[in-house]
Image 1 (cartoon, one colour):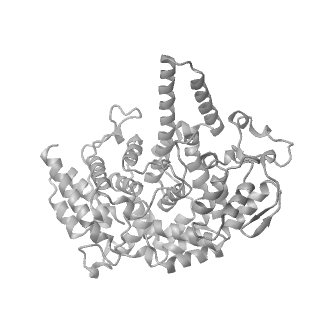
Image 2: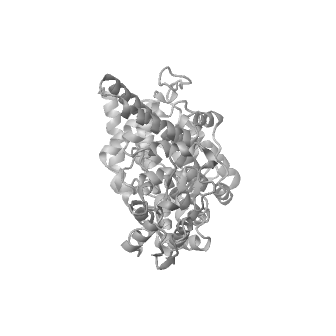
Image 3: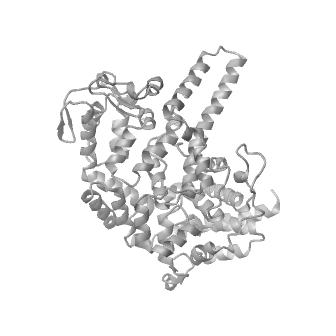
Length: 529
């Protein structure tokens, strides 16, 4: 490696790794190296408290966010976001997402095509033709995943409602699915776009029901195999343990078994039947269909169940709705979801008072997610300066893109998918159903820091494949040089005021704009929020 990159790497890693122990402390009230007396100072109408609040509210700051915040003020800005109506994207980015086959193709057709390709591969005789078919199928499967991940990353980087975009990713991780299991990759884009996104700010019960009926979840946690006489308890267990109540909330193994019985018969239509539209099940009592979801009475255990202390009479699909109602109205559910949200947005160890206040709102509002978030974001903790929540790779990557390119569309999002995978947090890539860990300690190892430096340098250089064409070939709309972060109003107003002395010293040693960008994006001040 040439001497200049080695020096650059040493400075950046030394800055970040050297500050980890100090920044892990939670008793600071201002950024390291900044006098506490400056915490209330304002820069062009923004206090440090405003900046801290905005860094929790969204994946990362850009000029449009700052302008809207200044126009509305904190409470109106928050309420506008909680209304959930601003899914706007730059026209180029919106068109880019719509052009992806996993988004543009009807889900039944996409699934039927997937099944046909797999069947054709299995029927191909051994030999060169089989090898070629295997290679083609592998490429097809990779493209399905890549497209689904690109769609979510483009939404995250360019979405107009950054609070909602963070929440979409939070719920994708909370109700985690694994793309490499069976046909889950076929359903991943639909899972984000039509299951999670429409319910991200609504009633928690509706979100649970939407995930329960989603093809991605039914396949991933095996409820497609949960039928009378041949039961599978995987989804019933995770629905309570990971999605709603949490470990130690008081439910028993008997409750898991009873919920498993409630969920028998909840599965998917075969793709060929799904493509026939509304004709399937017409005139057959008890069948419930919603897209690819189908409740088949012949596969259901109609015996009475005793679940969470309540008797559920055997009645078919209505049992599922009754069971979910019982779950989401448990005080343990209100507390568990509030705790998870506070840990993600505020701190690894949020104050019990904050979590309790959020849980009360959850119960009072019948699980209104927007109301719970409003309680959280109007708390003093949400605006506290000097928070020490370390960004997971998703937050790091998206915030780096939003700061560096500040709304400029990229024609090629494939590098984003690859970078996130190399940092150890691929979208739809967690094998176990618990989702990626979101605590600081899980992402502060030296290997992670080295990767972040690498991608800080790639993003900050402007010389990357983000501006290549769809095939990754000739560059188009390539920036003339490294992005000019240092002289931007966004940096001056929202980044520079919170930089520590150590980061300022490192930036002063930068020998080029690319080095300067690299040092900033790999600094502790940028990696913590």
